Every structure is written in structure tokens, then in C-alpha cells.
Length: 175
Image (cartoon, rainbow, N blue to C red; front, side, top):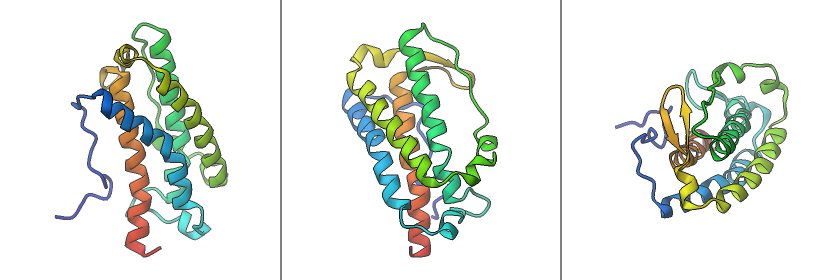
């Protein structure tokens, strides 16, 4: 059976029961993403960066560019949940954000640098949280109450998911 190229590592399990050991692994994934991503894209040409990872999909540049946007939103959600009682969060139209002109004009290096700095700071926060703090929640418009543990699991999956978009394309095209 051929894998769905939209979900090279499968879909996120919304029913995941996150353990303390899993949290450690998820934090490691968040910490590692910027360097792994940089390694995968650093030697790609402009043409390669502008190659879609699948028919009708985003280009590698469009995969890399919105990652800081996504993780900034998640970082802020963590801060809100840690400082407020089950705050309502807002979603955003990421498919429209990636169509804004800056996503085509900003060098990939800028996005990588932003992601690297953000993930360093986020990892510090995550490593300092107590078990009870991971039970804190925010109100998501589509998912309802979501714990910080589950949010961490989601963003660890998200990291691997988008990295796999790039690595699978590189394998497929022999880069």
C-alpha cells in the first residue's frame, strides 16, 4: 500500500495518552527540529526549494516558511494556558498566511534562524514545567479543551510530519 504523501508519518492521534517519558521524547523532538530542518535544506538550490513535496502541495520553501508562524502560535498558547484559566485561543488560516508575499520573498535562512531561537526558548520553558503544569488546558475552537501535554505531542508530531515532507521528497528525487 502506498503512503499518503500528505501524511508521510501518518495522522496525529488525537486520543494519545501522553506519559512523562513520552513528554521527554516530545521535548527532544521540539529541540532537535531546527537543526534537522537546517541540515535537510541547507544545500538545496532555489529550484529545489521551490519544488512541491507532492502534486498540488506546498513547495519545500512553503513547508519551511510557516513553521515559525505555527510554533510561535503554539508557544503563545503554552504561555496563555500557564498564566490563565483555560483561555480561549484563536486559530489562524495557515494556508492563507503561506500565500502572503513574504513567504516567497523571505530567504529560508531567516525562517530557520527564527525557528532556532524560538525553539531554544520554548525548550527552556518546556524543560522547566512541572508534571501538573502539563495538565493545564486551553480552549481550542475545533478541539475543545486541550492539555499542554497533548499540545506538546501534537507539535512533536507536526515537527516530524513536515520534516518528512522534505526528506521523502529528497529520497523520491534522489537529492
